[in-house]
Image (cartoon, rainbow over all chains, first blue to last red):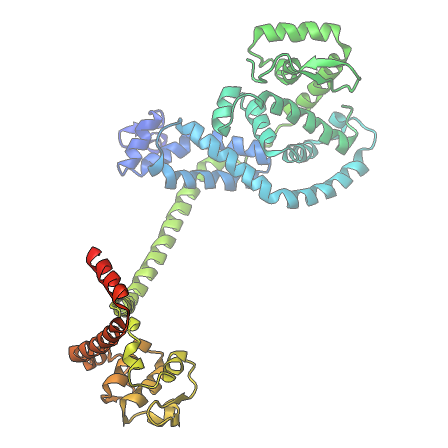
Length: 199
Length: 267
């Protein structure tokens, strides 16, 4: 069953991306399924780490692959398929966060109050449960400027080199290290403001 | 890896101690140093020695370490079980739903198209005809009306307001309703057409000149209007204009006449 699922004609999930794309462009619709199966986890987690919420990440992941399906015909192979997907995932996540920034800030203001009530004067790591930590992290990450957020996620979670990040963001590598540093500092400040976290 | 671009650039130390400066390269590399992801060994050694001798940098190091540790320890919940098994079918479903939606829209456009094509064709013919009509220069011949017809009628006809119009021959005031459904004289038709259908004013002019009769209510009898103006009439008009030019020329002094002739020759 597993074997059938992961094959599409002569190609399979381990085939080279260019072969899979060529197969798709030659009319093998199943080749697209291979791309989804190959990259769905990676793309989901890239998005999830940016938007934190699973439902949002799910929506964006679907959007990314639907967009890929429509744009594969125009894919010129200038960058690797994964880089192309990664870039789309980052851009979609940033757009999503931008759209929801106002809504999120309202929700977070409410959350902030509840944090204050619960944890005045106590150590964050001891007191916060996993959900609260997640919410706090979401607040901290979504409070970052777009570029810093993207750089932080790529560097911290995905361990991408600054050169790779610069290719994805289509910017020069210079300054990315500063973006990363400032992102970490800012996350610290946001957490500190929320919790009296000793930073 | 040097990505900050300027190793020698000094920056106020985040500890806000006046005068305490630190190279940006060292400062910005701290998060990577903390996580062990710094691939520049030389820089790593430099940071290590700076940390030994600089308590402020050490303080910054501690702060960043705490943040990175907090973020690192905050694990996101795993997605629901079988999430990744169900993702592909959902994506395929959405793609096909979007496809069928596009098809429905396309089919709708096609169904409208079979009505739109004839209508657009008619409009296109009318537009082309009108453009051709204008470009033919007929509009640029007001002398047809000027010679022997009441000039004051022209602005009235072109007005196209739908209000009453003065008949050119007897100055009788009339409305469109008066002539509806009957055979009328050319002047009446002119007035009626203008007030009721906004048909090209150019056509109206020729009706007047010819003085022929047309059925009222016939909207697009442009060919009839054209045929109503014969070549003979055009030639007559040219002749009148030529005669006036000739008389104007002959009234000029001899030297001016010869100048003009010379200029014509040069052309």
